[in-house]
Length: 102
Image: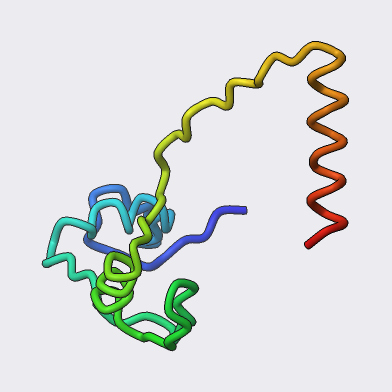
């Protein structure tokens, strides 16, 4: 389904002045300043527990609590530790012991 908007002076307008929304919006993006707001929905910071509604304050809290922000970057691939049968049994036995004796 295509959504149309009325733009009679647009170069891609049909005889009724209608232009597909995707085309109309693509042409209008560069006509004004692009402003990114510092405000956001109130969010609880997982490092400190404070409720914040400012992106810059949220980033400051993240840095001050020793955490890092993660975006689209790729994480390092996990390299499995190769264990023989005896080492694997011992590792499982140790993990079970640690879980039971917390």
